Length: 518
Image (cartoon, rainbow, N blue to C red; front, side):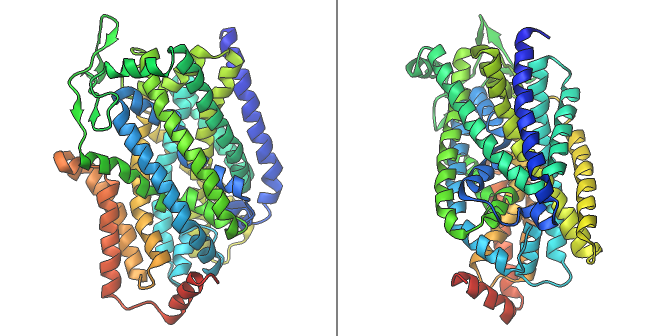
């Protein structure tokens, strides 16, 4: 290990130590009760709410997956995805946050998403709670795997060590940290990590632009690649067995691909996913005062717009500075690492690399914690053993965390996994399973328990069906599975609700009280 690598390692160790200190600081408070562990006692301020929501949402995908897409095939895919995410973020904060905060308190002080849906419909046999918990477990295990892939790629490229060993090291660190501190530690560290992420992005894009000869030079170089810098066209890397070909030291591209309205709608559909994202929705439930959601929304939007725009530009810039460095779709997701280690002093590069680690930790701890809470709080305590003590719930939580982490590690064993693809599937799963149900639960009084169940099952089922079967037909059917699954789930909620007995007077009274601001 040379001196540069050692300096990078030192910087990252300093950062990781800071994260552990935060976990220790909050551990005692978090372990006082399951409510404190899972929701922080509803004590988050506007800055922590905003930054932790967005940092946990974006994950290592922001620093590796999105720049990788832009590096590989140009502006269109990455930009339309980013636009959809920005719009979805704003609408979620604007129309969902305040009513969910209010409704979660009214619904028997719900502290998890399955809790909320179950209490919202006042169900006794906990079918909604169980189904919601199982879907969270499935999709968050996939999500956690994407974070472990990020850790593996990061450490493997930095230290020249085997991918699998590095992936497991990262997974163990995240697991220990999550077990230690719970929701408060997670949210507090996510606030710090959100700052680290945006600073890392801005530093790299500034230095990279200067190195490339300025913004104009990057644009001119990008124009030489057919479709690379277009919103309605896409670059087409010429590959053999998935590896882009190089001629005379330059990457080879074919004729640009068309990028029509249907594809644009497909990519912007990413924004629909926000309405069903547990890690974001929980922050709405955890803020100490619903009046603080407005300033929190402004903070979140500034962070999101800057981060997404810079992440996309880093991928574009990377093609100018390192045109043949990454010749597969999977390898292209390491362009941020390449830019950092090549253009910065070693110690500073280490702190920038901590930005990737920050993004990964901020997401994976959220995913693991929410998935574990779904099993421990909603299935074990809510269904299996209703008289379980807080101590028993906490033990089940930690055991569940370990099991989920092991499964996620198995999923992440493939070194050629593409982070963007893994995240897109889990994102569509949450968006279609919970997004329509969340909107109808908050804004349509006629929604019934049967409609809620139909919406969850149909949304999740359509994600799998579309992804694994229908999309293979190509053409119009190749659109992102979230869009058709979201629409199908919404239709099922409406139809089944109208065909079944309207909600009880108590449920409608709850709805009206929340609507009135009580």
